[in-house]
Structure formats: structure tokens, C-alpha cells
Amino acid sequence: MPFGARPRAVLALLGTLGLSLAAAVSPASAAGGTPTTPTQLFNGNRNCSTDADRPTYLWAGSNVVVEGIPGTTDPTDNSPLGVRYQVWPVADPSHTETVTHARATAGYETSSLLPDDMLADGQTYAWRAQTVAGDAASDWSVPCYVTIDDTPPASTPAVTSPNYPPDKWNQGGDPVRFTLSANGADDVTGFQYSWTQPLESIVLADIGDHGIPQPRDLYADTAHFVRADAPGGSATVSLVPPYGGGPMTLWVRSLDRAFSPSETTSYRFYVSPTPPTITPADPSPEFGDTTAFTFRPDAALQSRSPVVSYSVHTFGGPDGDRTFDVPAAADGTATTELTIDGVTGEHVDVTSRSANGWVSDPASWDIDYDTTPTVASDVYPENGSGGGAGVPATFTFTPKVKGVVSYTYTFDTEPEVTVAAGADGTASVDWTPDSTGPHGVQVYATTRSGIQLALYAYDFTVD
Image (cartoon, rainbow, N blue to C red; front, side, top):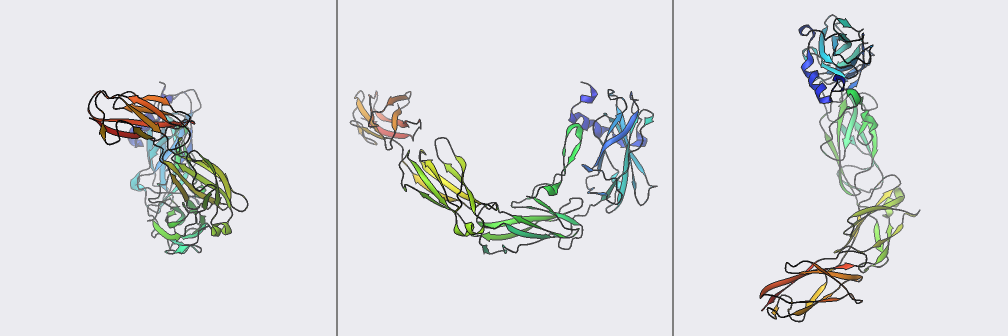
């Protein structure tokens, strides 16, 4: 495998092994072309800032990683290169330190750690990079500027809501307006929030091809982050709770310029239930019937923002659970048809969705069925005794629901047998025991549409 095609894990290992002070390493072997200035400069997986007045703020608690892509004027050459990094305090340019990644690959990000013993909280530093190949070296890159911020926000944010006061019941239907403030921490530049706890870890970048970081704009994720209006300022967000009613808690923490978080605070409030109503055309449909269901919105919910659709969840059907949406009319009502074919019954949950995004808590409708067949014998009564070894008997299977076309049964541990049902849905089978003592038959019916109904076990004793 050519060096330039080595897997990422191998490159990372070489990068770790190659990190050292410049004075302690020998230059890499000479490459085939002239070294070129490193490109794609990043620090802490964030973009290099070349503006001394707008440095990148970084947390240096686990060192500061700097990186760039080395190269030469010969794009076909895969000879090892080195990358040299210099760093100095902006306030004292004479205090310069150098670190070198001794073996690097042209076209791939090459990282080193800035000396952590010189990185002081609150200080601004400049760093630059150059490619080295044997005795040759490229021009230095333009400087990148970073400010070390190892101190997280000193206070938790303050959270208020004008339309959903805390610790009391509120009418639902409107998005919750929250004001998040830095609460005296003047280095706060934004906030992270979630309806669940703990809050997710903050990921500042993804890693793309050739190891190139792809920094994220956290504040583009408006479901979880918002930028403050000024350092130490506040932000306002409108959020729809994750469910329609009951106790709600929003968890919030502040973020400084290095995206270090404060401790987490919470805001708890209560939302009155707002489920829709479910009305079947037939209140007691038989198994296998198709019935129209009408959904109507909660009146208070409809008055705040019209209901535009319903999400219908059915449980227990032959094809498993399913979910589908039904659009609503202008008055917020909707109608759909459901086939009631759950083996043990049907359970339906329905939530409404308003034009403003509010989702209600669910309304439910249930019906239970016994779809096991009835089993009867003229000689061997259920849970009783009769007959004897070698005494034949007829067992009759009778359905409790319509549409049965066959029965599948097994006596004791014998192989399963399927028998067709008659026009009236019943079937009879003959069976002769070969021994005395306990015996049994297990049987289930199958419908015309192929649904396998519930199993029934019929036990008896042979005298």
C-alpha cells in the first residue's frame, strides 16, 4: 500500500509518535518537489482566524491541537514531509516556541499540540505553520490567532416565560416563549437547551476526507441552540413541547466564546391536556369490519391555531403496529376508515397537529376480541375425563368471529394438520388416543384474508 493511501488510524498513530520539540528531531527526508506552505489551517477543529482583533476562543484544558495540510510542487510525490508549527504570545512575540510533526503526508491534515505550559487562560496567541522536506522549508503561513478561555461561565442562565408561568397549569396550544439570559456572566455568547436531560455533548466539527475538519455552526441548530444578542446578553426562543400535556421541563445551560458550558438549570411548568376526540361510526364493530372514524380537535387548541392533520397509530393488527397521517378539514375535523382486525383486539391512538406545530397528547380508542375457536368433543369433555385408550372421538371447532376458512390443530406432540372449515365456519376432526392419562389439542383458525387468529388449548383426560 503506498504511503499516501494509508488508513486514517495509521496516520493518527504516526502523528502521535511524530510529535516532539523541533530541536529534538531530524528533518524529514527530502521530497521530490519544493515544499509548499500548509493549507487548511485549523485549531481545536475550528477555523483559523487571521484577524488579530477577532481571535478564535479555545478551551485548552486538553491541549490545543493545530493542524494544516502540507504539500510540495510535485503532486505525484508521496515522500514523507514534516510540518513545523511556531507559537508566541501576541503580547510578547519574542517568546516563540516551535513544535514539529516529523512525518506527514502531502494532502492530509497533520496535527501537533501547542505547548500547554505556555498557554495561559485569557491570553491571546498567534501560531503559524510551514512544510519541511529535508533541508528545504516552505514559506510560513499567515498567523492564526487564538485566545485561551479555560474558565466556563460563572453562573447558570436565568429562564423565564411570559405565556407559560412556572409551577402551575397552563392552557396548551401556543408555542412556549422563553427568555434565556446570561444572569451576570459577561462572557456568555449563547445557550444550549433541551427537553431531555442530560444535554447532549457539544460537537464542534465533523471530520471529512483527508482529515479536514468541517466546523459546525451550532447556532444553526435552532432546536437546541440560540445565540445571545450580545456577550453577556439574552435570547428569546419559541418552542413546542415534545408532547401535548402534563409536566414539562426545559433544561438550559450557557455557552461562552469557547463553547464551554455553564452548569445546567431547569424551567418546569404544566400544560393542561388537549387530546382530540375519536368517534367510530359503529361503536361496537365486529372483528374484520371496516368502520369510519371521525376525529375532532380540542376546542381550546383549535381556537389558538387550527388543527391541520392527525397522526393515527394502530396497535395489534396482523401486520404489526402502523402509523399514518390524516389531513384535517378547515374546521379541524377528519375522517378515515379502519379495518378492525387485531387478533386480540384493536388499540388506536390519535394526536392532532396544529398549524403552529403544536402536537396534542393522544386520545385512545380500544376494543377487545376473543378470536380463539370453541372446541367440543362428544367423548372427551374439556378439563374432564372419558373414553379410554383406543376409543375414538370427534372434536368440533367453532369460530367466534366471521370469515374463518380453516383450522390448524395438533394433538399432543403430533405434527400440525390444517383442515378446511365448512360454509358455517365450523370443522370436525376424528382422533383416537393410544394411551390413558392427560392429553390435549391446540388449535387456531385462519381467516379468508390470511389472518392467523389466537391459539386455544383444550385439555382432557383419557380413562
